Amino acid sequence: MLLGECSSTSRSLEALCGKRRVVVSAMKLPCSFYCSLWFLLLLGAASLLLLVHLQGLSDMLQQQTPGAKFMVAPRWPIQKDQPSDSAVFEGINLGGGFHGAPGEEISSNPSLPSPSPRQPPSLQWLPHPSTPTSGDQQVESPRPPVTKRHRKLLLKSGSVIPSGAPPGEEDRKLQGMAHTQVSRHHLLREICTKYQPGVTEHPISSRQVSRVYVEDRSGLLYCEVPKAGCSNWKRVLMVLGGSATSTHGIAHDDAHYANQLRRLDTYSQAGVAERLRSYTKVLFVREPFERLVSAFRDKFESPNSYYHPVFGRPIISRYRANASLSALRTGAGVTFREFVQYLLDVRRPVGMDIHWTPVSQLCSPCLLHYDFIGKFESLKEEANFLLRSIGAPSNLTFPDFKDRNPKAERTSYTITQRYFEQLNTTERQRAYDFYYMDYLMFKYPKPYKDLY
Image 1 (tube, rainbow, N blue to C red):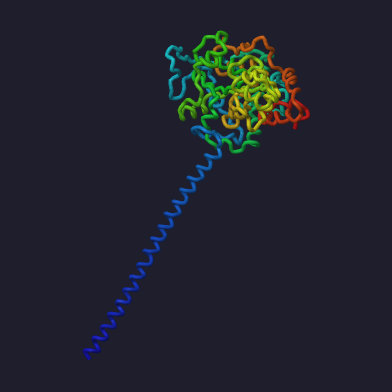
Image 2: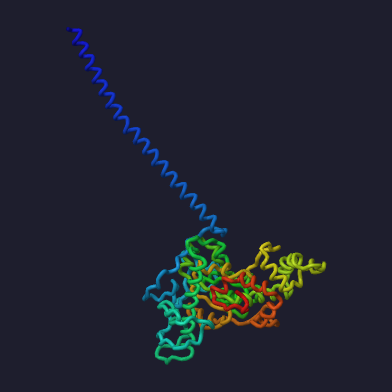
């Protein structure tokens, strides 16, 4: 009997132990499950971080623009800007006073005069004229309306007739200029949206602002376009900055090599971003073929100790059959057709130069969003309008003198046609294709009817 009780007790203990093993096994199962779950979560997070990193590297490679990243450009406005009561045009102080740079000293030269604010004159917006006298030759109809920001730009111009005066010719010209600016910005925005969508998503590189000159006291950014009045614009910037008292006493070499002007890419990342946000960004362009001929005449038809050996010799060597030893040695005497052959060659024997680089590449107009787009064809009138608008001294006007090869006739439409007659139809078409975006962005008509 005692033996039976022991056997029964043993079976009870074994059953109890079996139940405990089941419980323990049941408890172990969730633990391993949770460990597996945590492992999968960590693996997923690591995969996500790796994907983001690879995407960033891919974006960097797609930009194809060397240099340090500064900032992401602001997007084109999807809708019209809402009216503002502030006297600001694209973030620019239109009160006429000079101001210092954001977060930096006005100038490293202690001898420059200190800026002093000036009050704008009391002006009144005058009625819109029926037919403006200023603007592009081919303006869309109906034209885009003048926004309040452009209206304020017009009102702050020192040339506007004072309050109480009747409307006149001068006022109609100024209103025409304001409408022209609206039309040019509207067209550029359409072209950029169509041909360069998403460009504003890319960071701005140092190369893309390397041709932009800075004048801190008047809050001006000017993109240098050679053969479109850049020498005289540098003279104006020197006077605005206080390093010169008059534009007329500045020699050509001093304007380019001793101007004491800083380029935008020499500032810190924060300095670049703030200036792009708050300064007046200015761009002046020229008919592309005319600008090309002007550059050729200046660099290859006149003595030049740089362009003849650096560009002339490889051009003659590549594109001239039976070139003389003298031409190969000096690089002088490059013909316009040889120059165009070099320009259109994807395997050029020598690199590009800013004097014939398209403006669409030189100044990145789709990325930088210029506040004022001027044209060489009406350079003096539009430049003076801009100077009055930013509050420049009243005695500062845009110079209109030609100091390089002063005896040579200015490159005109007629002269340009004469040079392009040296090319065949295919060469003219390829040259047009080379500057196609400039023709579209700035609404220059086709120079030949057979171009497509």
